[in-house]
Structure formats: structure tokens, C-alpha cells
Image 1 (tube, rainbow, N blue to C red):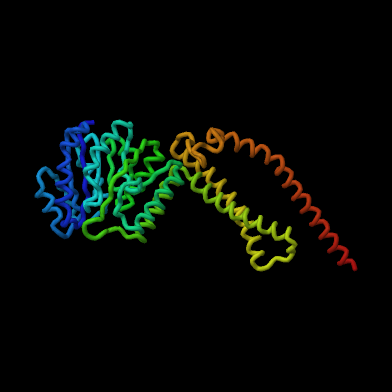
Image 2: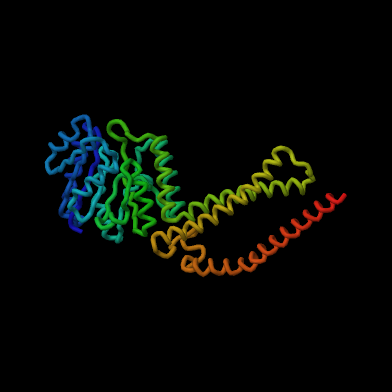
Length: 366
């Protein structure tokens, strides 16, 4: 690895783009010391209505690419990646929140730890100027990714990363919006890529944030879940099923405790608890079974053996290779049980018809 291409997506960042670009260009010597002698900086102006592009063009050594209209944070990074020439690819926000001075350490970690992706983690103990609401949100999404993937992640949405060029084919496709980073994290884990986190500082941004807590939070949630479902639906559905079955079990235990305590007549809340116990048990079991089935359907679709499951491995190993035999066995068992039915139905229909005619004849003779 001898060259690094850093992409900065920028939308109306005239107040801070020159400072962040100059800071990036100022890490050349540190990158050389880290074994990376060549640096390329690409600023992608994503349809800005201010002087962002013109200011960036005034910084020596910066390549500026312009989008005629706003296409999104992820789309701007992907445009930069397509134009980049480096062996390693990186990206960084234009708002001054991430420290470009951390890139030499990220590059060293990529080489030293044999990683495919190195993430600058804002949640790993370093100083952070992140607002409390966003900190809570990022903690929630990191835990969600960890839960659905089985690998602990402290920052699923960090906007400062370094990755090997060759891993792009495995993490694509990626969305065009701000959910670009959590989806990249989710796909990378499920693709089996080695991802390392390095603590970084996080500063208060320059200018107004473009992140909507509600709108983008909902998008983060749905895309993380659907991405995980595309790889390992068994884990997502089984976790939901275990939760429902657990709630149903607790309701059932409450009912048993009431009965042992001498309460024999259910109140409205008791009826609700009984209903919850039944529905939770049935729905939970159904979701677990559905997840197992979906995992094998996903494996058949991709034509690969099932590699994952609720606990990181298939529920029933090599089960996907025996669908045909199982179908024949089930059909062979069911056919003898069903075969006598048509004859029984025909016999019953004949007796009913004879009885009806006889009754009619007797009524007529009277």
C-alpha cells in the first residue's frame, strides 16, 4: 500500500472547506512516516449553492468534482471513489468534526492488523463534542448492528474511514444518503471483512448540521435491519421471536403464580395476560421457524451453503442440501394417509344418495 485517496463530500460548506482541506494536505509528512508516500485529496461538491467548490479549488493540490444537483452524502463519496487512484480509499466529513491528523494512525492500523477497513471511532473513549441526542442515537445504532451481526461495534456510523480498494466490490451496493456508513458497516461484517476501530477525537461541527434526528434515524434503523435480513434473516427474526416468546412466558408465569396464590377468577388484566401468553408463544415460535427457513432460502438464492444463524452458525448444518429428499420423504409418508380418503368420500356419498332415494320412495308410498 503506497497511496491514499481521501474523499471529502461537501454540501454548502463554504465556511469550513478551506480549513479541512488544508489540514488534510498538512498530513503528508506524517503519512510518509506511516509508509504512505502518496496522497490524493478529492472534494466532491454535491450541488452546493454557495462558494464551496470555488474555495476548494483554491487549495493547492485539491481535485474538485462537481455534482450539478444534490445527490446525497453517499453518492458524493461513491463519485470520489470512482475518480480516486489510490491503493487505499478514505473519506472524511467537510464540517471539521473529524481529525484528518488521525489518518496516518488509521493507515498504520490497516497494515499492521491486516484489516480490510479501519474506522475512526467517536465512541471508543476519546474526547467527544458530539451532542447528547446524537451520542445516544449512535450508541443505539452501534448496539443494533452488534446485535444483528454478532460482532461488537462501538461506532457504526463514523464518517472517517480507510479501506482497501479491493473491498469495495464486497460492500457495494451502498445507499446514496447519510445511511451510507451504517450500511457499509453492516455489509462489511456480514461479508466477513476484517474491520478495526481506532479511537478518534470528535469536535463540534462548523456550520449547520444536515442530519435530521427523526428522518435520518428512521432511515438508519430500517436500512440496518433490511441489510442484516439480506444476509442472516434467521438472527433478526429469531431475536424478535425469542423476545415475544419470553414476554409470553413471563405472562404465563404470572398466571401460574396467581393460581397458586388462590386467585381462580381472571380479571380483565388476567385475560389480557392469558392472551399475551398464547400469542407471544405462538408468534415467537413462528418467527424463529420463519427465520430458519429464510436463511436456507437466502443460501439457495446465492447458491452458497448457509454460514450464519442465530448464534453465528447454521441451526441445522448442511440442511440446505437435503430439501429434495425431505420433500420426497414427507410426500411418501403423507400419501398413504391421504390415499384412502377419496374412496371413503365416494362410499359415503353413495350411502347418502341411497338413503335419500329410499326415504323419498317410502314417503311417496304413504
